[in-house]
Length: 310
Image 1 (cartoon, rainbow, N blue to C red):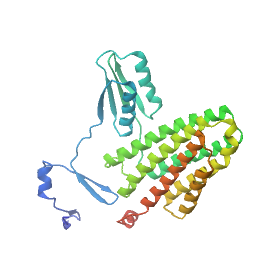
Image 2: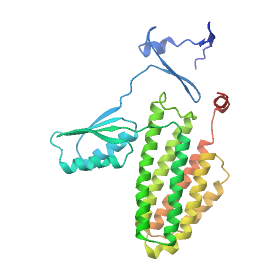
Image 3: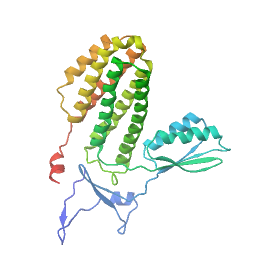
Image 4: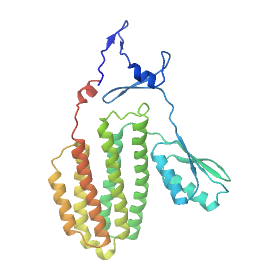
C-alpha cells in the first residue's frame, strides 16, 4: 500500500502526486486529463475512457439471440445490432420486435433485410435503495392479492396477477440494468453506497427475480381443489417474505428466528403437489434474502460519518 501526503497550494486547493509507474502504465503524460469524482469511500481517478456501448449479434438460434439481447440490455449496452447472413424471415423479426414489450426503453432503431438494430432509451436514477423499495412493494401487493385469489378463486383474477408479474419482470430487468451501469459507469450514476452493499443488492435482486419466477409457476399450477390446503401455507410464505426483505433493507437481524421457523413450517405443511413445491422454493429465496441481510450488516470500514458530514 502506498500512502501519499496531501499538499496545499495557493488558493486553498490540495494536490497529491500520482505513482509514476501507474502514469506510464496508463500511457499518460503531463498534458493528459483525468476524471476525478467522488465515490462512497473516497475519490476515484481514472483516464476519461469512452465506454463501448454497442454489441453485434450474429443471428443463429432465435431463442439464444433473444436471450442475448435481453442480457445485453440488462448489462448496460445502449445499442444492440442483430445481423444475419441472409434475409431475416418475417416471423423471426416479429419475435425480435416483441422484445420491446419486455424491456423498458428498448426500441427498434432501424431495420434492413438482413439486420435489426435496437436502441435503449431509458433514464436511470441513482437511488438504488428507493428503487429496490418500490420493487419490493409491488411484490408485496401481488402477494396480498394472491391471498385474495386463494379465498375467492377466479381465472380472471389469476390472469390479472400473471400479467402484473410480467410487468414486474420488466422492472426487474431495469433494476439489473441500473446496477450494471452504476458499477461500470459510476462517474455517471453514483449510488453513494458501500461497495460491498452494491454487490449484495445485485445478489438480492437475483433472489427476488427467482422468487417472482416461482410465484408465476405457483399461479399457473394452482387448482381449485387445492385452495383450502394452500391458504395457510401461503400466508406463512407472505409473512416470512415481508420479514426477510425488511431485514435486508433495515439490517435489523432480530426476525431471523421467525423466518427460519416459518420456513420449517412451510417445508412440513406445504402440500406435496407442484404448487406446494413452488411454495417451498419461494420460501427458500426468503431464506436467501435473510442471508443477504446478514452479509450486508457486516462492514470492515465505516465511512458513514464522512458521507453524513458531506
